[in-house]
Image 1 (spheres, rainbow over the protein chains, first blue to last red):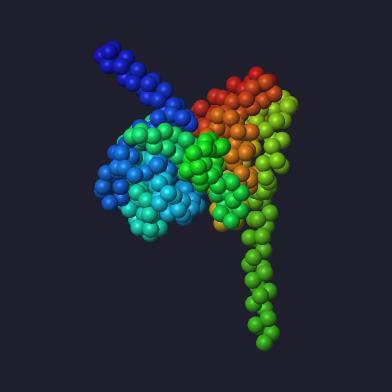
Image 2: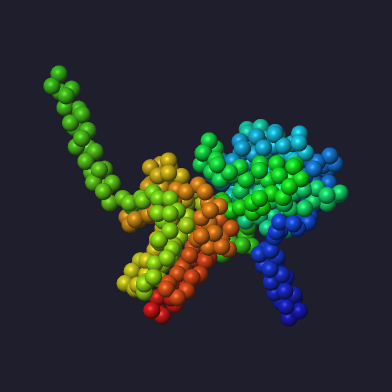
Length: 203
Length: 166
């Protein structure tokens, strides 16, 4: 019995330690295998011809995430042909937010006409590994050989409220920099967003 | 003809109580970060709880009653709650005021309207990722960030301890 308690304490400790971790710019990004809204499994390794991937943790219910839906479609349309397609991942637990259920994701993807895969991080392991903190949260990955490296983490741009008033298109600038063989600057930005809904981190 | 004329006058009477109720609404102060920033740096013997929240944020709504309850409980100590809403300015009438009304909040509420959050989040706290809710509890000799929602008991014990020390 003691052993069980001890090992569960260790598990909890290591989990909570793991939760506070996440990627920094320069880290190697782990591949994943997650279900798209049409039931197909999607991985980074599926993208043979990509130069990189724009991974965006986002969701249905969050007004900030909603404000960026159309801009994410535009980014995907523009950069997919240049070698940087978007993969969107919903990291939320639908038991906490029913609006972020897999079925609701299907409806949203269809309504908005998403041009990119919209994946469900059902076990919430991918967002924890990446260290996503809120939605929307971008991880721009560059492909080197068969591996992916994190080159930019943060916001899409500097105005969630009004696209016409954006002065810094952080994500697009970062992709442009990579395409030009340069290092994105800034490589990390912050933005207000909806915290990711996870029973383990609810206090 | 005269009777028709009376209808708008009657309406005025009906509307009067509603107007009176609006007078006791919370006062919303819309400001950019520069205008808000002094609230983060008061130096006196009061303990400040700055709660960043929004009506669209479910965990914020969950903790909101506990925050109000703690604020009432320590009203006679040197303690001040500063509510900072990140609702959109065009949702003050439709979302923010009705919500505050439903919680009987009649005090001042700041609405931080500064879209360049990359610039100001670090100035609130370098470790804040930008997720909501976020609370900063500070006094002249301490500063504690909390990127989480509070239960009544947790917040109560923190504020009790901090305000006792004074």
